[in-house]
Structure formats: C-alpha cells, structure tokens
Amino acid sequence: LDYPQLIKQIVDYFLAMDDVALVLVPHVFPEDELAVESDPIACRAVYDCLTKEQQENVILPEKEPNQRQIKYLIGKCDFFMGSRMHSCIAAISQCVPAVGLAYSKKFYGVFDSVDGNQYVLDMREQSFEKILQMITLFFNKYNIERKRLEVTIPNVCFTVSRSEEHTSELQLHSF
Image 1 (tube, helix red, strand yellow):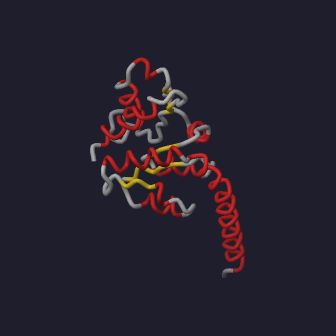
Image 2: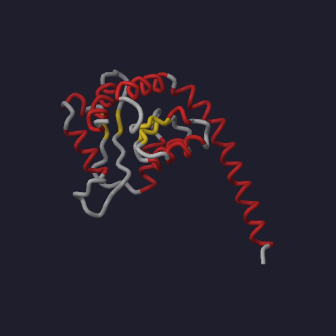
Image 3: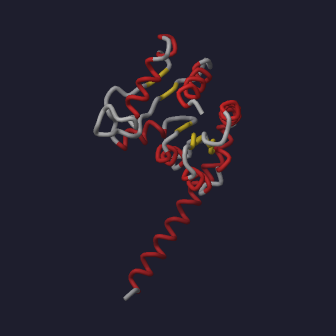
C-alpha cells in the first residue's frame, strides 16, 4: 500500500468538507530528528503538501507536545484515525471513535477489547479503495460509535479495576 498516497487521499477527503478541521497529531518523537519513525517530520510533510486554503483548516503543533497535551488533543476530536496503536488507545479510552490504520496485528487486540475490530483497517491486507470506502462509512456514523463507546468504556474500566483488585488480593495472600 502506498501509505503517503493514502494519507494524501484521506486528508483531501476530510478537507473538502466545509465543517471539518484536521489535527495532525505527532505521537512518536525519536531523539534523532531525521529518523524514519519521526512523526513530527511526517506531520510537517503532510502539512507542507497542502494548499494554503487547506492549511487554514489544519492544526499542526509547532512545538513538541508532552503526553498529556497529545491525549488532550486527541480527546477533543470528534473522530480519530491513527497508525500508532497508542494514539488509538488514547482516543478510544476517551470515547472518541477511532479507526486504526494498522501495520501490525496488535491493533486487533486493542480494538477487540471494546468490540471494535471492524474499525481496524489493515494496510497489509486491504486495498487502497477498501480503506477509503471504510473510512467514509465510519466517519458518517461516528456519533453512533461515540454513544456505543460511552457505554462500553466504563464497563471495560470497571472490569480492569476489578481485575486489579483481585490481583492485589492474590499478591497479599501469596507466600
């Protein structure tokens, strides 16, 4: 899959809408600024390819945000798409409907924990056209997904909390 071309198509799709602002959220900050895995460089490259009119509807953090600022940005979104699993976790945990643009099978476990495997678009297996089609479908029903997450996430948190309590009790009684 031509990832840069996919991102360009996705960005163009959303920026063609009148009432959409796009936030480019860098999530990985390697120490070597020229590293291949540098999200700030990737976000800047996407931004620089846009027309001036498109750039007016795009938010790109100028300085490196810390983890709280990143989670805050993600939490303010109505809809989120990420190719970093932990950014998707940040979205889902705040009841922000998310699509995982997956490059590994790990995404399925995360999304499965909230009954959301259909929101994993595996770039290793799905076609360019299918991914764009699914993004359009998911975006058009993000309000429904948000309501589902608002029920699901508290239940997941309760289950995790109970599991942690049980684990703590076991540790107290172990020899």
